[in-house]
Image (tube, rainbow, N blue to C red; front, side, top):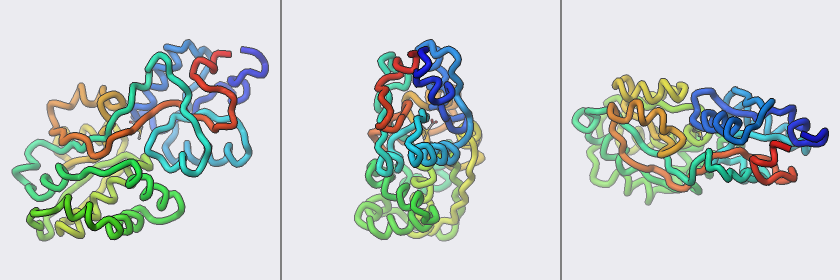
Length: 268
Ligand SMILES: C[SH](C)CC(=O)O
């Protein structure tokens, strides 16, 4: 592209997250389908991506990231999704709760609550923002639970407490799932008296752990598109309890001060 092309401005790099994330597969597909020769998808982590975004935004520098909603970045920075005319990143989707087979028989109380767990992008963003502003995840989660008693009590209405039984949840260190998993842990502990163990893993091991029964469940399944590959492979070995949040979106995200609007513009 021309010397001033956006590629040269960002050294032909898209700043991604952990390699197992579905958004990374979609970004690789975008590089292919939009014929973005010379472009590179940089692997890293959710935290490294947000650190790079924060730095670039402070310096009003161009940057292209793999981004998703809900995320605190949209309330802190003026950002926009690049249009995706080929639909590589899919349409709006949901985050599902997925549990191991047999959980309903073994831990009926946890199962019933996990089946009820459902909240909004605003709810999740509040917890994410508190964590981004420095609160520990468990503190931000406990505060949200305290401030949303009505919604929380509906989740656990009529469910028998479990007096110290153990529940294990897996998650990936995406800001959205750090928030949701800590809220679920807080409710399981405070309201249903479980002992909850969280394991932070990559996306592949998270799905595999639930499928082979190593963990009881997770609230981090981005479906139907972003985790389609995991679902195709392991869907029959897990129990999908449906959406715990609707209205998610994934794609390539840039600061509003960049004068590009579509993934097509990366070719210039
Ligand atoms: C929170 S990320 C969009 C999920 C993923 O890409 O696998």
